[in-house]
Length: 381
Image (tube, rainbow, N blue to C red; front, side, top):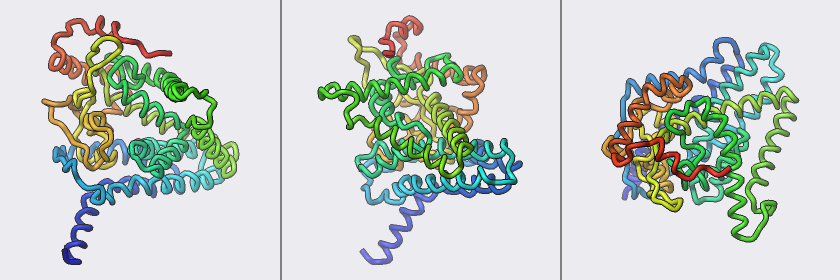
């Protein structure tokens, strides 16, 4: 292979990865909000929610699938965006914690607005990238996932996601699977409570199987609490109590963004119960799929969620999308769907008929879904 061919190959690989690097463009937008305040506080929410919704409408769907056997080396530039994001987000967070509490031109509500926008970024991008990193075998990547989650005070998400959600998705034992007719405003407080306890319980059970108490230092919750304490200390050192408050605002917005996405990913979908607490194997049909091009750039193919649950070890560039004959399809990308989720009557009008169609297509033998769901094993408290 000639030097020109090697160079061209690297350029091609970089070119295919570049759309996924759009997230870096949100960083200067956060700083514009901090520097100018006022109407510029709307820039980040508008860019993430409305701009990408408009781009989805303009660019349509991407139903092309990469080769699942693509060599890891060919994914270098895709992998790098998730790796560099952790230090980028750290610098963005600490620089705003240093600047905003002391910025004389910003009123209190404007300072909160800056960190609201930051929370949209750390939730939409940061937690999403931590999700990709926590699924990798590399210890360094898993550590980066922990750092990103500590920045939003949601470290237990890794334990809950890996040990509970993937095992029990689309069953009553998974807190994150939204029930049919359950509005987001009921779902959200339930998930905040249940996910922490299910995550801690899963780690405690793993230690018990090794005849170890939950207090053993191998319990990752010690790492979670330590990292979160470090970020509280950083917030206080840079911005005093105001910095701590703004840091918490940012974390709260990020968690809200995450759980909005969790809500829509499996809404109303149920795996078949086989008896004795066992369920059928997870299939693409147990997650909502979305092939919208632009929002998949921003969310590094998170909307190809059907394949993620079917094959959790795949890196995001090789996640497959499915047609309506294999997986249920969302009518819009995540930016629009999360906005709909905040309006339960409108959400039910859009999504409930799709859930009923899904039930008829895959489980026509179930005639009374209320009775069927009540018969399943409830999530343990």
